[in-house]
Image (cartoon, rainbow, N blue to C red; front, side):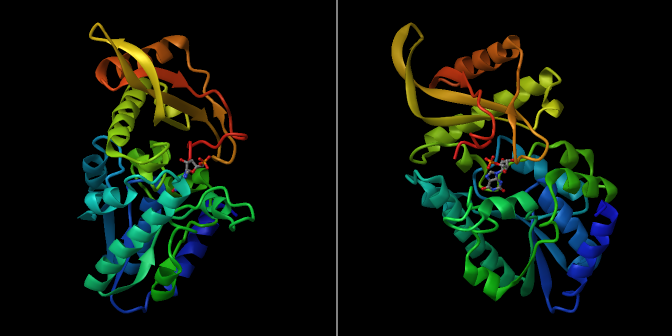
Length: 316
Ligand code: XMP
């Protein structure tokens, strides 16, 4: 299908719920998928649509403020829910990312359940896209990742509410094309994909706030250097990963064990396959220099040079 034909089909599907009583809640994160789904829903449900941004504490540096402003400019001013403590305390110590995705999916469902009750809403809209559905597969049957919005969203939530996912047949590029046609600002079109579980997908080993903060700072540096070098728009995703590996370093004239940060920059057309980006050495030098000089806890920066497959884009 062309994107225009898909647009009409998606609207038709949403219109089936136009008579549902009460408000309609759309989960938004600042990403192009959820913003596009919310915009489609706005066309059908008008002022009854309430965009909601749940802050799980796993966003990048400055992202929440920026996203709130940009959503407002796009006509989707969100209700902001600060749920940082709720999520972070439940993730503390969890080593398995699949377990984290389930915990995040479950917590999202609880937060939205409370909100939907408050807003007397029976319909929930989210920006699930085709790769989320494919990768979630079935346990033991091709599951790559339990995407929090698909396999991670508990059955009780799907039974209690009408969960509408108008973009679930589209790849990212098709979503971007639709978003452009709907007039969504460049901010959304040019953003790199960012996983729903946020930085929790980039902290390897037992989850803790120290690694989360290092990941957040280092990711900000990776993005900043790529923007400065005019490379940000040319790559699919670019970020930092933090695990438990350490490296002996010399900082302030004395020996210390610091963390190893892995930088991952990939090029891809649809996230189903990806290749690592052949960044110039000077760019890698700049990233490494800024990370080790401005994050006291880090003594080594490594660059990930394996494509997908066999690796996935995110580390876990
Ligand atoms: P992987 O790591 O499987 O990622 O190669 C493919 C694309 O999906 C994003 N990703 C996620 N997105 N929830 C999401 O909404 C998730 O749990 C998740 N895991 C990975 C990843 O950033 C990449 O663009």
